[in-house]
Image 1 (cartoon, rainbow, N blue to C red):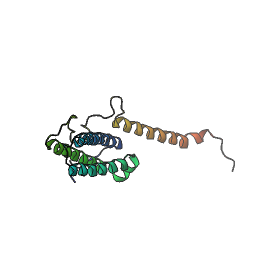
Image 2: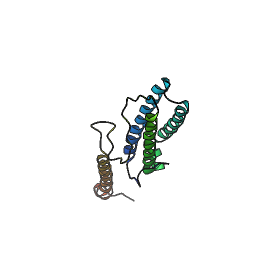
Image 3: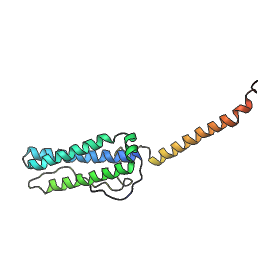
Image 4: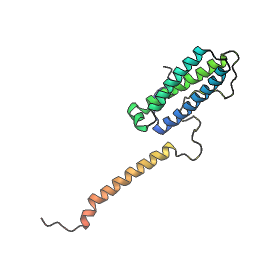
Length: 163
């Protein structure tokens, strides 16, 4: 395994965004390999090995699409594995570019390192993880306040029970 970096503490949405980015890189490299293989510029062993890697990635990607699955595995673990796949995609693209006669159109993918430094996948207008956290804390605080009021103040306004 080619893991990059140390412990990672991140949200499931950040990991999913990173996975979408790596998936885009995988599909871009796949398209480059297909075009060059059709033209006879990619050895069949290279193409077959790539398909094994792509299948491995597809299995990992599909298994970690839900936030629940990611929480069971651990977001840090899934992010490290995503970083590993990112580094491996870059290696595949580098090896492809080194083959004789290869013609590449798409820009080379970049290794995913810091989840907070990666370019956004979803575009403008997404809610940040900090905003989501603040909203969750406010919701929990509101629920606790309502519960407190219900337990402490509401009984004072109810008629006494006749037991």
